[in-house]
Every structure is written in C-alpha cells, then in structure tokens.
Image 1 (cartoon, rainbow, N blue to C red):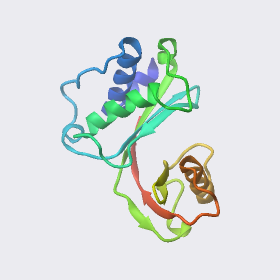
Image 2: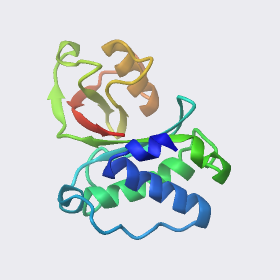
Image 3: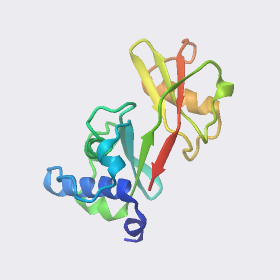
Image 4: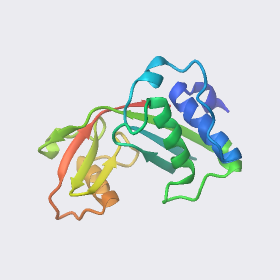
Length: 175
C-alpha cells in the first residue's frame, strides 16, 4: 500500500500496533531502531484512523500518561482501533484501507480569549470542572475557532452557555 511506504516512524508504529492487535488481540513489542525522541521523551499523543477520508477512530491523551511517546502511541493506537465508543472496532478486512496519523501534543497554554486561537495552528481544550474536551488543530471541515470550541464543548458535554477555561496547544502531526 502506497500510504504505508510514506509513513514516518510514528505513524508506522501506530499502524504496526493496530494491525497486530486487530489480527491477534495482542500488542506487539516496541521495535528496535525507533528514534531516540520516541523512546525518551514524554508527551500527550493522539492516534487518528481514517478510512476513505472519514474518521474511523481517534483516541489520545492530553498529557503524557506512559513512560515514552512510543508507549503512548502503542496504547492510544489500540484504543483508537477497538475502544473508540463512536465506532465499531476495526476489522481485519479494513486494515489495508486505513490511513493513520499521530499527533504529538505540545504544552498546554492558558487562553483568555478566542482571538488567541487559530483553528489551523492550535488545538483547543475546554474545561468546566471535571468535564474536559479537546479538538485537534487543522481538521477537515473545522474552519473557524467558534466551530472548534463548540465541538470541543460538545465532546465534553459542556453547554454553549457555560463558562469554560480555554487552553491551546500546538501539535506535530506525523503521517
């Protein structure tokens, strides 16, 4: 598959994990030769799966939970493929049709107004008490900051009339 040839180490690891887990029910061991930053750095990571351009699964962590970016990718790749409550688990016959991306999140920065957001550059986190919603930057069909914040609110179950704390973050997207 052409997509597979172009994938970098991050997306390639996510694909290997998804394919192995869907076929065997087990997570593969981390392969040798991963870039040092994947093995030694920590960050929040989102794994997104698309099929024919449509979202098929997306799960991630806002901040690091595991010991390395590679471990974060492994756990979130499994979750995106079989535990995203919006979708049925990925089936083996779908694997060749999937495109995978991995977003490594930068530090969260507090935001005091919508003017400090940019839908193409920054992802957004909205928080109200214990409810928290996140939307990644630069997504197809999300063209305004208002849309981005509204979707993040909806994901968290926060009403449009409720006051929220806003945070922004940048990502490095790997495909």
